[in-house]
Structure formats: structure tokens, C-alpha cells
Length: 242
Length: 184
Image 1: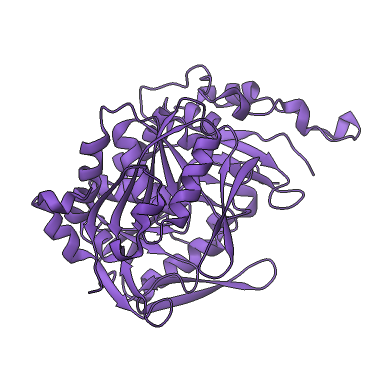
Image 2: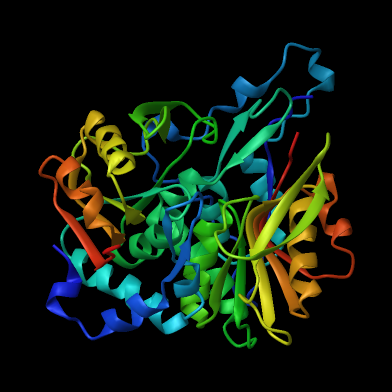
């Protein structure tokens, strides 16, 4: 099923900030969000759910919204059928090209965590490496990379997790974290939550408290939030995944 | 050019935080592990500050970071100097239209990719990675940027292995590093 990619805009609400008008992303024209008409499949019009960015923006107008979120959301590019047919891939590389939106993204996380006594920011390879270190630097925490097998050179602990077909593994260096530390787990996006769960397990196995998982994007239909159980999840933007 | 030769007082702290892991990924290689540097918030901050002090105010519009450890150092630099961050990735990771550059390894070849449209003609770029060894990957990165009309102002790495002569392979492009490691 192809659906026009719509985004619900979230985030911590500030009491006095109402949602403003949609911000035009300052991307090079070659990278602008493709026109919605490109995502309409050849099927009967009654089965097509058209939701323009403008109307989804209007739906959220009544909610308090940090004014930075709109620009962050519109800076994310959706690539249909990547890595395989049916998947609407949320591409954050275009967000990284918008210097204000990228800075705002980091600021939103930093504002949330700076007074929470976080000593560890764990980032999941590879896109978690882009968002994690700036947050860690700003809040004075260590950055701990969580990597695919055989990348980390020293002694590691591993956690296996299920994929749609088969399993994968995530690793962390022994000694990177100490019992009692308070940690965040960062990735660009949460889908099914499998990778984040594995990352949390690795940290909890060495008696670290995972305070929260933080992602730029959530795909709520894939129920990653439920897979995290009672662990806290904070995201800036929600999107339709498929 | 290396910051170490000018003895900035922050460099000692940075160098001592880098862990050397022998025989990784294979026998005979002394692997320079920067993950221990990242565990020291002050040393990690000093690392970023040294690059930011060098590039701020120089009209750098692009920081290109090489997957995956270049993703750790590049974005904080980009954010601090107000530049775009452009990830350079192994094949098939970037979802949109890409341009590719092949490069030679000790055995075989590899390939680096960049999104079409991420960098524009006239952009002034630096390329960031944790370490320069033979310089093959950095060369491929520079090629990608120059092919789309950007000017590569400098390559910036935390560590250089001078014995592997990567600096010469850069064909005259400036290279700036914080620490050098000699196997002796």
C-alpha cells in the first residue's frame, strides 16, 4: 500500500507556543519533498487517502507545538520503496543539510535532558552516531557507540535480536559504562523497536538505568513503543511507515 | 600539519585517551580506538573545540563525514561552525539518488557514496574522519566532493599514521590532524 507520507507533529509542548504556519524548507530544489501526486498509486480514487501536508498541519493547529518542530518535520525526506517495495523510508540526511533544523533537533533533546543527571548517551550505529554525540557533548555525558558485530576492537558484550527474517546482533564495549549510571539511547528512528530493545538490554545487563529512548522519528503503526514496554520513549515527529 | 607540533595543552589529554588495541582487525595491526576518547567528556569536547577553532569563520559550508566514525566527529563540528553535515557512506546505505567513487584497498576495492544534491558547486568543504592511514578513503571522499564542484579546503582527522604516507596520497590537499601515532 502506498500512502502519501503524512506526518503528525509532536513534541513537548510549550504553554505559549501555538503552531505557526508551515515553514518552507530551505533545501536545494533537487532535494525538495516530492509532490504528493507522485505517491498516488494507480487504483480507484475511493481507496486513496489523500492527506496533504497542509491539512495534516491544520489538524495539529489546535495542539500546542514547539515552533521548531514544523521545520524539522518538513526537512525530512521520504523515499518510497527503499530498501524494498512498500517501505516509505524516512531520510534524515536532508535534515542535516538544514543547519537551523539540525541545530533545533539537537536543542530539543538537550533541553529535555540537560538537568536529568544523564552520564551516558548510547547511540545506535550508524545514524545514532550523528545525533548522539552532539547531545552528549552539550549535556556533559559520555558517548557510547552501540555497533554491529566485529566493529568494536576491544572486549564486547553482545545482544541478539530478531529481524523479520533471522536475527542480528548489537555490541558494546566492556567497561564503557558502570553500574548505576543513567543513560539515554539515541537513534534516528524507531520502527518495530527491535534494535532499541537490544540496546536497552545491553545497558541493563550491566546495571545501567535507561532513563529514556530518544528518536527523531517514530513509526507508530509498527508498535515499537509497545515493544519497549514500560520504558520511556521520546520522539519529535511521527510518520507513516508503509 | 599537526596540532601536536604546536603543543596545545589539550592535546596531551586527547592522546592519552586513545586506546591502542593490538592485532585488530588482524595480526600485526595496532588499532587506534577512539571510543575511549568519547568516554571522557572533557577530552571529547576539547577534540571538537580544536577543529571548530580552526574552521570557524572560514566560510566552510559543508562538513563531510566518512561512515561510521566520521559521523561521530563531523556533526558536532558542523553544528558549531554553521555548516551542513553530509554523510559519505558505504554502498546501498543512502536511500536517494547517489554518486559513487570506487577506491583501492590492500586487497580488492571498496566504494563510497554521496547523495546527489547534498553538495552544490561552490560549496567549501572539509572532510572529517577519525583517522588517516593510507589515505584511500579520504581520496575517494575528496573525489566525490570535487566531482560536484565543491572546493575541498582541508581534510581533518583526529589521528594520523604517518608511516602509511596518507598525507602524500592526498595530492597536495591540506591535512590537519591532532595526534600522530608511530609504531616505531
